[in-house]
Length: 225
Image (cartoon, rainbow, N blue to C red; front, side, top):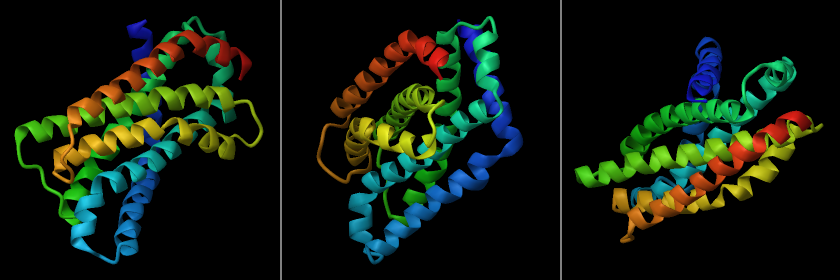
């Protein structure tokens, strides 16, 4: 299963490496969102620093939604989904591979956006423990978002108007990620006195639930899409 998942992840990442859509379109969109947030707060440095975790994760979720939509549309428009159904690959392997590929893209986006938050919003990382919390939160959140996005992408793949339906279905589901990741980043960046590791447990639970559910249900969704 792991070998087949790596094959699927490698395929999706090679497509992205050749098209460079994430870095040429999705990343500029996320950076523009951060800039617009700064304008909305009237360049108030204190407010920007205090609200930077929430603004960061709103930008990440919207940018991640674009990446998920792109992956879903490629599979459907090029009839790749039919090839996957007819292949000898097991549906759980396909789900795991797609989740891995989207997770890698989200982590790359976050790495660059964190630099933007540190540079433009005045946020700071004061210790190695804070840096570790920041990194683990990013990884766990990326896996959770990718798993949910892959699952709902398959659910809406064969539906007309999926470009608008996917955000309507997915964004409410990602509310626990937005809340948990924001609170964990509040702790890591010193924006609020909270226990970030406890909120990280919520993110871990979210990721595990959608990973397990996706591994079990993706085959049914793949046949119906």
